[in-house]
Image (cartoon, rainbow, N blue to C red; front, side):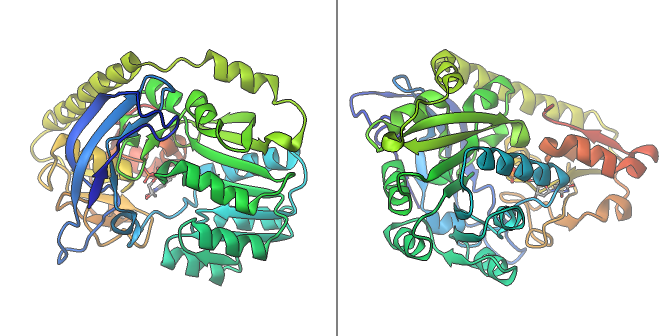
Length: 400
Ligand code: TYD
């Protein structure tokens, strides 16, 4: 079901020993929501190893992607926060030059490409490993190839859009095991002028903000500028510029060009890369902080009156991490609400806690909701003003 990694995925140096820095033991796969009649599909170690040479942190195991993605439920959020982010990212892409044709790897239900095609892109193509989301995207008018990024889909995409102005990979890059292969397939789709945009959660933010709940089996790597630079070294590409955004607890978009594209990389990118200093100690501090946050949440729930009805808000992958790390069952957390149709009616992985529709915040009369979608805090507080004004309470286990 999983394999152990042998060497750093970014610098690939076989002589460098990877240092264990974070360990939550054996955990269920964070998005393996199952029905009551189904068995939990699998557990794997959740342990992070750090490369002292290029500062990439990476999981000790790679779960078989077929198991991880066969019934994928993650749907690009339709929240106002994400709409604004799409706009900001698209504005940045446009500012870099031509943007008429766009290929997106991991296009999910086609949301970003819809935004792009409404705002200046004349031809767009998605590639996505989820059969159901590829179908949804096609029904929405977004041409989508079903499959992971491999030699075949890269070749198909390059035939469909031979001169892509932009090749984009949002939040799919850290799900990939073989980065050199990933870059080779991007190479197939890119010509000299193509702008490549790779957006990932920024490891510097994960550490600084103590976001241990970003660590789960789908996120194989926790990436910063140094690791990205090391990874690109043997490829025809280099970082041209970078831009950080606050969504998802802090992300970075790398704008990458071919080395023969000409021009110098933006000086600010070089400065950021050089000033970054992520160390083993930072990761060890995150591990200590995680234990403290887990104990604090356990303590806050235990301190509530026995009669209190406690729910969870947002069946995010983060909710699986929290609920399992805290060892909560239905006795402590009766349900978790979510807006995603494919999660509703299922159980939080590793628990018997059901996922209910958003309306449960009214029908179940919870005294307290633990918010596992803390990255949408502002939006959620506004949306649930009525619940709060009626005496309801939110616990934010992690403060953004
Ligand atoms: P998200 O933070 O996007 O991702 P991850 O699974 O990577 O941790 O997930 C947020 C979840 O919260 C998603 O399933 C949708 C849900 N959600 C709500 O139920 N209500 C809301 O108002 C918002 C903003 C999100």
